[in-house]
Length: 407
Image (tube, rainbow, N blue to C red; front, side, top):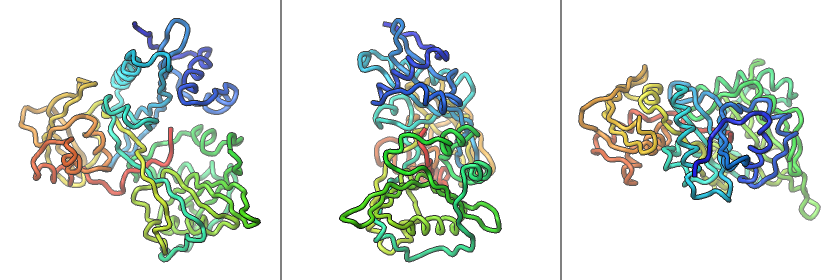
């Protein structure tokens, strides 16, 4: 049976998001949505699958720029992907993904990206895990720092208006140096990260906003919340780091020292931190920092040649890549990639391949988060040891890819 796929109109919002919310296990509140996400949602980039007059499948897109090694690339941020439980195993998700990727390709965007609610789903559509994040937890009595990069600036609490005035520009400066981070437009800031009215706090306070400055210039900021608790009369509050962005070692050190110095706190918790977090190496007893690594950003090379030409490479070299793409057949072929720190080209060729792989594996390497040789040991890349070493050297990136937010 065919299920028509169409972008939704404003009057179809309740049906669309009821389907989506049901899939993710919560109730859709239309009033709350229209006061926040509804003001910056891109409904024209949504797709609904219809069975008669009922929405039975959903997906949407946030448009943003994604930082890749040495560049920033327009990207389709895929979100809201669901299929009603009554309509599973009918090819609906495959149809939605195919139509969406075709639309992205026609629009001229070279990349798509998403967070996967279930990790095994998206590999068959060519998405590869390109970044990981770390959930961290530590008890405050064990948070003593042995090494602290010196800092000469000052910390102060700021208002929402002050944060909105200064943080977006600072964030963008950091974003452009960190593969995996995404651009944020004005409403993304004012309605998502620094919302005037905060809801669903689960017993936590509203956000506290802290800024680190040197000579009057922002060098870092912190968003956090606390939840009041007592254990047999002793303070045992929970502190949740919502976001900590630092533009220097001094700012990073000062902000974490602040976090560990907040009174009445027992447990400190931070999600989606970096896999190469320096904090681990600053602690007196790093064993006390409990860490759990998880996949975060999945990337899809919609236009593989265009995506490879868009990024920069750590070493000047030439690599012939045979790419297999079972879902977007326009990518299948053999390409010669010529690249270095100053730029790159990627064009079709009839030459013999140095490495052979599928799009999912190439996407995983794209931001520099995993090496080709590692994937070869996992049986996912073919090539000689010498070719793999060259590919590893070309695609290596510093810093490691990181995305500090879910979309």
